[in-house]
Length: 151
Image (cartoon, rainbow, N blue to C red; front, side, top):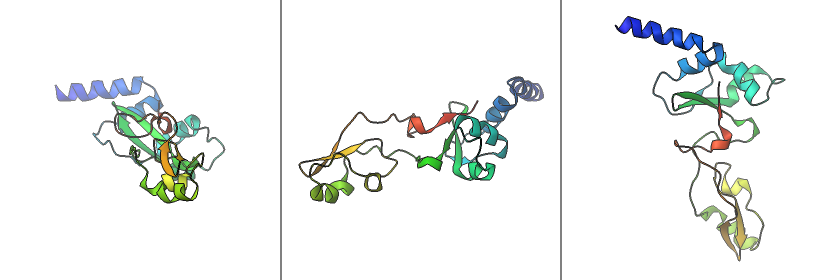
């Protein structure tokens, strides 16, 4: 019975097509943490992140993948995207000094807030304040807009 199930699973994966098969195979293990991009998935990452004229070795070095909902998701950190978990804190102690020096600044720079922050920050009367609706965070705690489904 087990051999039939394995054969059926393998045939089902192959029926999905080459890129679907690779993505499905990559998510068979229960690993929710980002890991290196499998070499076979470089063309799919080049396509979804519009990296067609980029060195494939750089694509592999700057991209991580993780499984969510049985599907493979990728994040390419090449454009300063945070591929780690999002900072969801609603306070910004690191912005205190900046805001004291810039009491009504329209923004607090990312080198202070971090690129992983789900909020955008400004200074109001010398104190850090959230300015706009936060970025979406997925079920695993990553910034949703930075991760793309590999199909």
